[in-house]
Image (cartoon, rainbow, N blue to C red; front, side):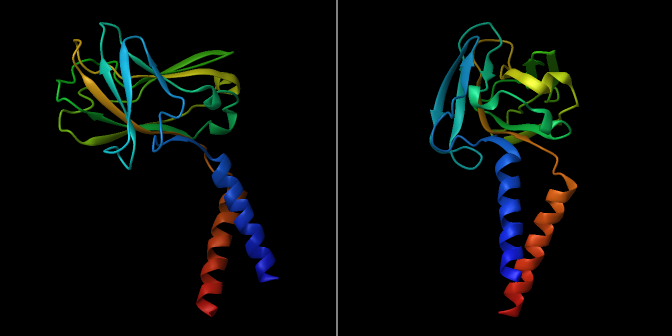
Length: 195
């Protein structure tokens, strides 16, 4: 009986984990992410905030954009109330004096949503990785997302180099899924303790 309950909780937990997030850690490649509007993107195998990462160099006066792959598009209704986040690093120490850095545009059949995820002066010229996130609102746009872009331009000039890593969209767990997850973890602890 305990093993069946454990298997059921584990299956529910794995199902929740598999459907709970869109994630790009860039550990093996660019994972379909591209850069447009004047950015030269290179995948880097190490040195990211946990492995691989994307390095984008500004090459024009336009504001360069990171573009989500097709696999990320579609129905995001389950992500309303969840978060979109990414990590960024100022690679070459240019002054972060261009406010649009971190601007996210989510476009769907119902229009578009625009959010500024990063405060002024981001990413700081300290060579460290910084985390940026915001809560996704309920919106008709999330019902059929057709594009997601993140503005990487942070300097008023054509010189900056930015690192991007760990782009993620996570859902708010349903109460029943969270209860199953906690129950499964509690059962694992109990079985381990008995042995």
